[in-house]
Image (cartoon, rainbow over all chains, first blue to last red; front, side):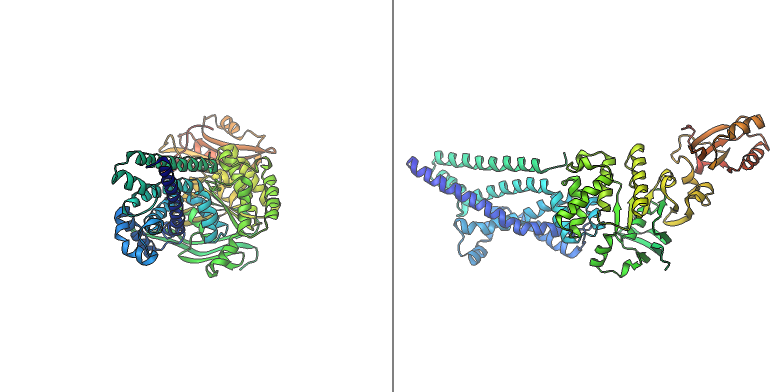
Length: 219
Length: 346
């Protein structure tokens, strides 16, 4: 394989990995963020305790979190095919990624908001703040640094998942490592794919942590 | 109901049901708080005073009885109406409960955001309030950069932003050092006088009540043990709990079991006359000052002194009569396990 070909493959698949990771993170938060908020407010000590809702959602989240991603993806093939029409490439990977990451995000959001001092929430209630305002202004506002840190952890986790997806037809750098490194023993391109994955993770990690630190006004 | 009562509690009760069983936090509480007064609620920890204050703004829903605030039956209100009335019943807390990710100014703007006040107007109001609490230079500081006293000042400014009629203070000075406590109490008094806001103060410290309250309810084991004028209760506590609280230090270092003591209350008598010294000269018997906390305000004495009296038969009674003849409130008692006093003279 020529250097140009290699560069071509790696650059395309880096873009694919980024696309997959960021889109899946976005969708995972669209589902996971409200889910995490519902989990926290329906909790026994929450602002609207609701045992049935909390128990059902908690159960679903726990079950989905227990299934290893690769297994979940394979298990979901019929569902993915019905909904998306394909089970390979970027399009076939996003759905299982979101299904795996959303419950993860829900737990992350839940734990971030749990760190918010209950007294501050009580103060907001004493001012006559409706639930919506308590969620947006107090819970999310006060948990911002922690939410940012957890966003970084989520992105790197999903990035790891995309690489796994390469084994069962997903796109991205994981596919490169599997197809060229695992099946064809082309160590050079596989090593480059690994280096690129490491660089991506480091970039997300550094930026995220710096942002979180800058946004935290507690110190 | 009478017009000048801004808060009225009628047969209020609150029971918590837990897996371990039910706990009665408040029982048959009846209280009337007048418009514009500073009303204190005192009790030991666990007496139910924090629950009581939370029942006023319905942060805790009472399980029995009625709460009237500004003529409204709180239990009859919808959530939206409740949120509305809460804007006129502000609250401050022991732990300040400021938003840590917002500046002082943004914290004060917060209730105004909830009340949908336009941003520019809210900011103007917040700056005025910062000036009122003496923190104009801290507008852009975050709570983490402020001292405890300053945080409570920001919390007070925040509570005042929506022009409340009532300010509820839940142990507002308990996390502060004595100097900050004094300045916060002075600020509250000032607010009460300048703005006419009714203030309800929850505390476990009699000194706080003495300092700024006009009337007080003493709460013990989820009931009101005694309620009335602060001066009256301070001078003549009737219930055991009031006696314990009025008494200098409940945190005893030394028990004086079976010792004859007397407590003298100064309530504005002349501070120029050396009452105790005269008594000692008169009887030619020594007394031991167990505790003294008296202040000289404009030549008048306020406060209390606890003396250990001679054990000789008859002398204590005569001393009591002597002191009463001087116009002082005197109470003789045997110091026992319930009324241990600190032997350190402050």
